[in-house]
Length: 251
Ligand code: PGA
Image (cartoon, rainbow, N blue to C red; front, side, top):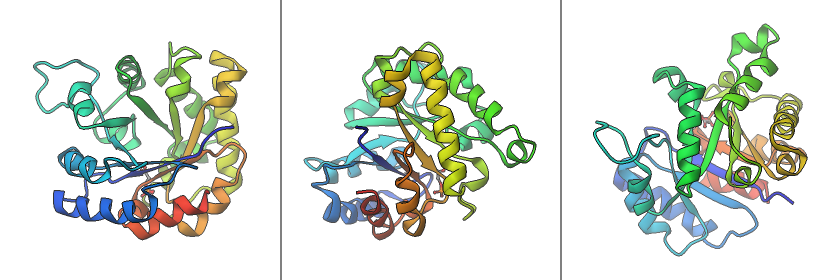
């Protein structure tokens, strides 16, 4: 049985003070939530205060990115050492906004995934097609390339610590959600690729989140699909009420 995982991706939002308030709000309802994994991913500058608020709760803290390198001369980067010191357990890698605005490639994402796993951080690896890919019938081709490229060389055992987030780029922040059927189809397709890469058992165990305008109104239906094991939430994760409602919709 795969345990569902809902993660809030706060992106470049929330000052330290605002982040504390949001974390407090989430803590109020979800501090003891054990039936689902709940993760919040604040911007780097707010990780420390959020970790402090959520210490001794079941809510975990993640980061939105991580360097593929160890500590050293990499201006502007953040290393696994620095994140682990702040009790980060998950790292979002290869988000479409990093791929688009910072030219992250599958090859770089793959290096980051390997580094994270080597250092006992759990990667949330994002994949997803753009609108033009879907309209030209290339969704599966693009998603397969990203899954195989970003997760190349990951062993069946390592897959236990990997979460894949399927986020159709056209649904991110646009209010357009993939239909339940569209999402379920791609999730099943991704599981099939993982089975081909490392075997059916690992594929049956790997958790695949849906992301892209998930909100309280559509969460229950999406989260009830056989291959949708959680959500990666952007906009609706910026308020405790809607984030908590999404989590509850999946319980
Ligand atoms: P959204 O973002 O929920 O605002 O569409 C999701 C994401 O980018 O992770």
